[in-house]
Picture (spheres, rainbow, N blue to C red):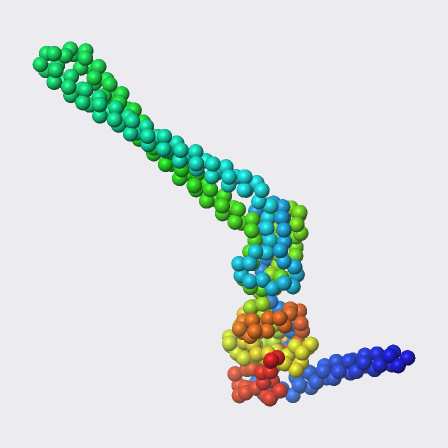
Length: 327
C-alpha cells in the first residue's frame, strides 16, 4: 500500500510539474517585452537517403538505427558476384591484348629486317641489270618481293596499333566495371545518425532503391509560423531562442535562416486589415552546426517547444531568455 501511495503521489507530482510548465510558458508568452515574439514548433533535421545506384540484392547492412556514422563510412554492401566476374574477364582481356601487342611488335621487327634485305637485293639486281648481268625478269621479281615485304611491314605496324587500341578499350572497360563495383559499396555521404533501415540482407532492390535514411545532425532546425505583421519585420540572420518541452531549463540559440515569400495559409478572401493579420508565414530557425556537433548525443528530432524571435526594435533579450546550455 505504501508503494502504491508513493507511485500515485509521484504521478500527481509529474502532472503538476507539467501543468505548471505549460502555465509558465503561457504566462511567459503573455509577458514578452516589446520586439520579442514567440511561436511553437518542433525540432526537425534534413534527411538523406542512402540508395543503391544499381538494381541488385542487398548483401549486408553494417549499421543499425540510432548509430552515428562518419562521412565515407561503409554502411552497406550490395551483392557484387556478377560484377566481380566481369572485372576478372576485363583483366583477362587486357592480358590478351598486351600479349597480342608483344607478338605484333616482334612481327614488326622480323618483317622490318626482311624489308631491309629485299631493298638491298633490289639495289644489287638493279646494278647488275644495268651492266647486263641480270635479266629483266629477275629485276621484276625483286620489285615484287620488295612490295610484298613493304605490305607485310605495314600490316605488322597496323597490328601493333590494333593491339594498343584493344588494350585501351579493355582498360576503359575495366575502369567502368571498377566504378560499378565501387557503387556496390554504400558509404555515408556525411556524418549523421542512422534514422531508418529500409532494406535488409537478401532483399532485392531496384536501381535507386533506398537502403538507409541518414539524419543530418549538422542541419537541425525548428519551423514556426508567424503572422505577417511579425514575419515582415524579420531578416535573415535575426536572433532567436528555442526552449524545448522536455528540457525547459535550457535556452538554445538559433538564427532565422528562411522566411517564406508566400503565406502558408490564408482566409478565403483578403480584403480587410484584420483578415490580412491572419496571414501566417513559415519561418525556419537554424541551430549552429558547431553547437550541434558539441551536443550531438542529445540531438533528437520531433521534440516540440517554443521559439522566441527578436524583431529589429528589440534592444536585448530578457534575462529568462539568455542562452543556457548543458555542460
